[in-house]
Image (cartoon, rainbow, N blue to C red; front, top):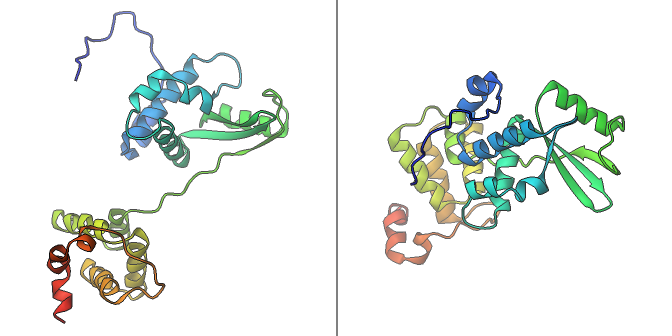
Amino acid sequence: MKGFNGFPAKSKFTPIPNIFFSEVLPQIDDIVELKVTLHIFWVLYQKRGYPRFVTFDELISDPVLIRGLRGEGPPSSPLRQGLTEAVSRGTILCLKLERDSGVQELYFMNTDADRRAIEGIRSGELKVGNLAKAEPCPVTQEQPNIFTLYEKNIGMLTPIIAEELKEAEKLYPASWIQDAFKEAVDLNKRSWRYISRILERWTAEGKHDGEPGRYSKADASPEEYRRRYGHLLKK
């Protein structure tokens, strides 16, 4: 890691609402979402005129942002992830415009002024180039992971339970895990022991909807399979 030499005496500053630090930041646990959100704040502050927004094309072409989002796969993947999370949280607003050249995505801060600007664009009061149609960007709803399901339906995680959940997440499809939690809740059997038994039963006997299981080391190695499921085979 390259060390930082410190901020120059006459550095410029980007203002960020205090409420971001008190209410929004404590909820963000994804570094990609945080990087994308802060970068949009920075870019918008440098804009002039009204309304102020940044497009997806600008973001994907920004070398500073893309360098900070480097990872596996194309750079659009983490950018899309961060934008989806920021829009879903409500920190950033998105407006999708259909132009002759294709669809254009515009991103705004979620402020009173920018909400009014978006309404003005939709109504035609504000002109942003050749506007054919304006509609909100769709927000992808992420499926809850196994830890969220546990805390929502059973209670506080313990280190031992967390390790068991990690193992289960490797072994079973996400749809099985969600269905097992739902079945346990419907029967008022809110315990991980009961849910794990459901998943084990589906592994041994098959699931009623015929959905195949997730590939894992247990599928590839007979020894691993016996180690994991031997207690079921003895029943």
